[in-house]
Image (tube, rainbow, N blue to C red; front, side):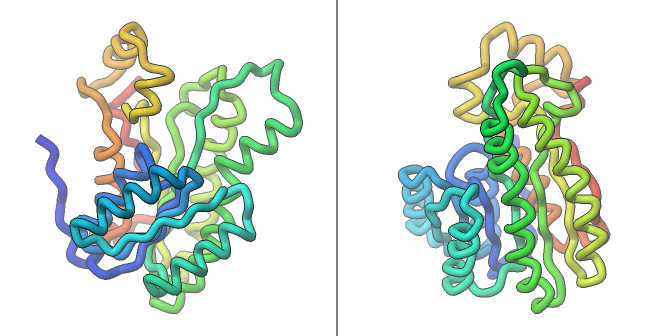
Length: 254
């Protein structure tokens, strides 16, 4: 049975989540909304995004969806400004968006390489830049960046993705030092193989599932909600002295 802690200090705080329409991002949006936060989420999947926002609104959630491709930095900055006008200054930011598209080393072109970094790494910098002034004005805040254990494993068929996700660690460490004096806590959450709908549809097989279970110290599937619980903790005052760290949610995978 999954337990969700209650963090009263998250209630009524404005939070921004990237890639919030599906998978881990959706679980984070839902978890923050359950805590009473005012949640804006960005995604380019308009159908799923609008559906989730409407669903949460029906249960009383203060949630807004903003249709934007995060590769377009000016459009992303404009979407954040629109969300701020709705919810107020942001105390919480979650850089979740990413796309683990498989690719062969020999097939990677310059344009493809740049695009994968534009999806999986570049937006984190400019989302953080857009939110930092809000957090300074509030006297502090929390930024959480999402990485992936795929870079630790050296996954060979997603080199552009693993390069970006390993860079998230360095980005987090340096940003924590840059923003810490303003009371802004920056941390990273690194999930293992999380059983999202997309992973089940595209990559899971009985053989891969069995191999992954054999590698885990804790048996059972890692679900998006498991990652969301770690994000909630890091966004809350319970993590007030956590900064520049990487919190791994992978069931003890070797």
